[in-house]
Amino acid sequence: METNTFSKFTAELFGTLVLVLMGCGSAVIAGANGATGVGLLGISFAFGLSVVAMAYAIGHISGCHINPAISIGMVVSGRMKASEAVIYIIAQVLGAIAGAGILLLIASGKDGYSVAANGLGQNGYDAFSPAHYNLLSGFVAETVFTFIFLLVIFGSTSTKNIHGGFAGLSIGLSLVLIHIVGIPVTGVSVNPARSIGPALLVGGAAISQLWLFIVAPILGAILSAVVWRYVLERK
Image 1 (cartoon, rainbow, N blue to C red):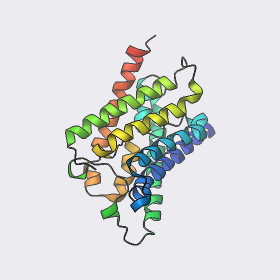
Image 2: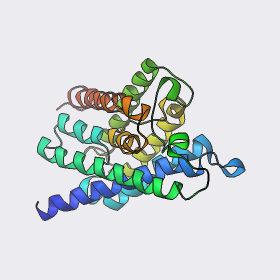
Image 3: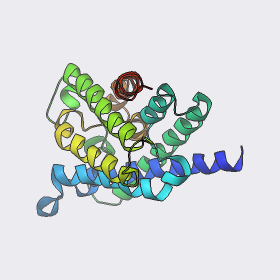
Image 4: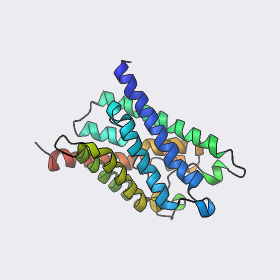
């Protein structure tokens, strides 16, 4: 593996680890901690701020995708080679698993914590949706939210955007917005790696429902890339 490729792999692994640890960690550790709980808004900002922080930390190394849907979208939009995207996706999934593992280690240090009862911020629909939204609602939400998220990313990182230096901020804040609306529906994924990490450690329904949080975000990303490339910014 070339030095440059290794640096990108490491950056994507670390960035996704941070996203899962801080985002899901806000829900598991700080989300509903009595009077001091950060609540839905706090969890939303934890995910968004994780992206902002990582964008400025590793963006110059790998572009800070930290999300397989983004990497796939970049391939479809013509901004990335498929071979490189595969390396990114492997790093992202490994980083998500590592982040979920660290979160489990920390959360387990509290008396009464149970991964079966308290979870790791995994996504779900029907009975496992935070507000009991059904499969159709979850699939539509994940597809549309990812579509919107990718449009923000394409626009913010476009060479035609004179405000490109603020890309990390606009992308992170758009993720905050998506979480504010979407947490009650599925807990919000828009990122297959973010869903895979916690699901593998929680097991059960988290794994049986995982397909939705892989398929819908990828579908949303592909649709967004096609619209961006052939409709909004076609040459």
